[in-house]
Amino acid sequence: MNFARVIHVSAFLAVSVWCTAIVVAPLLAAGDGLQQAVSDALYFFFGKVCHQIDSRSFHLEGYPLAVCSRCFGIYAGFCAGAILLALKGFRLMILPAPSIVLTALTPMVIDVAGATLGLYEPTNSLRLLTGFWFGAVMPFCLVPLLREAVMQWVERLNTATFVPILKNTFRD
Image (cartoon, rainbow, N blue to C red; front, side):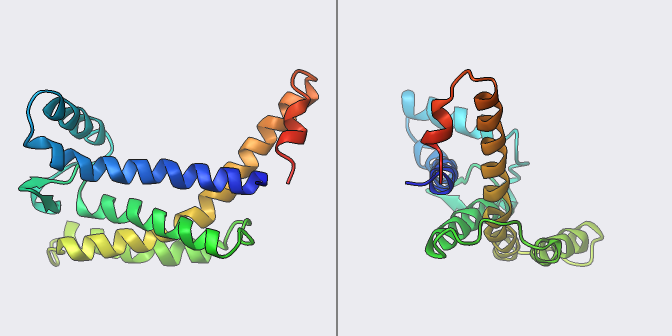
């Protein structure tokens, strides 16, 4: 497996675990003992990255997901984008044009601005869709950046002649 794929698979696995934890929190919430403790810990953790407003969240088993619908859309979109990147055979390992990122971000910004200005109240489905659209583009931006950052780190280690084997291990 080449280095680009290692980075890609690692990013995909990390976001998959992240999304699974979001869905597991409400499923464990009705439990007792350890299940309840794990659910509480997940809600606490995700509360640091999301407002978790109940009315802006989808619910499972009567409990809200650990993040709001927009955040869940971003994370689920990232998973979908990571799958698409893999289906493209990792040939798209260069940064996309800024216009593509802006195109992905614009619907979400319009949605947030419209709600903030009191023009309308978006539905959770709309929040999910605008988040998903943005999240689906992010692997095409973040995976190449992550790959480059790790490659620079490996090169620094190699120039220190501290761990020369890393260069051969992660060669494409």
